[in-house]
Image (tube, rainbow, N blue to C red; front, side, top):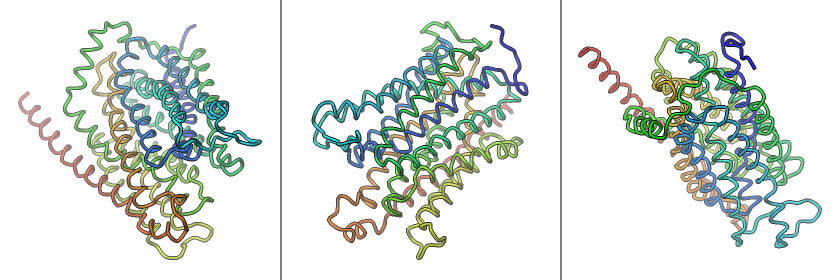
Length: 461
């Protein structure tokens, strides 16, 4: 079939198809991931630390593998990569949905009228979750590198910043819808929602798979069919790029704090504000603010360098963590019908989302401009290493801090005993504020050193 070279304001059909299927993938991912630690603890019976470890390794692998799958995607082409990705994701999400039923069929647990697996803390069968999540992890890793790299392929230097702004808007719109689904389910069918939500996610990825098969065709095929030696040479080049590695490590500080929307916040607000808290809706503040402001902020910062925009966002992130801490330090509720925990969490997330608007689109743009033709998948896959590091560190730190400052109430004989153990729960956010401030100061130093180096290089030329 013939593919028009331009579609909707100068962007190609492949650009819009890739962004649309990214929206469906984000709906699927966030619907599951916003409650993944609750699924692991409440449904499969894992402890806080075990649930954080599994979630962190899953999220970490999701962001580590793009370095490899991105290079492979350049070789086999983005269309084939997307078909592989959505096939694996559909299988994985269906696996999460069917796993409790499989465990029930072992005869070790009886449920009553509704199939809800309440955990086998002493059984090794619950670890079957690991290979299921590995399937999702591999499928998602193709998405991470391929979609963002497709934006690079389908835009020019002049349209790239706006292209990534559109991409990031779609990402967050999908995140908003995905997170919106879970709370009505949780309040209508209880813990069974953590199982049922996986059917929704599988449906979204199946729709995306069909869309790719029928609609995705790109005229940009540079890099396809390259030899494994050429793939390896590009791999070495990107791994030895000291400037990009330094930026990845620094921006990891931002993502460690941002990861707490999923690692800490759901358990924190339910334990501190009560079972009536709605972590899915609270987390939705982030994508809602991003969708509303990312285009505006990108246009406003267009005359500034990508690093300048990232610096602004980095100094907002420690402020967001401090605002979250305030909820447990205030007296009577400021807003009727809303606890201070919820109120200050929402305000902190607003600041976090604004920081993300300054950072994420320009960060991806920065990496895409470093990528040679035909290696966009590799370089954009490499850009996700900050999320790999933040997942491992963020979820690991979260599990330790939750156990120390905001433990599971079920572990205590009385409410009074739990309240005494969690009186300093807000200390959790002080740790993350410190991490964010160190990262922001490190980025200032990075900008100073790299700009001075570039000036010297230009003078020598």
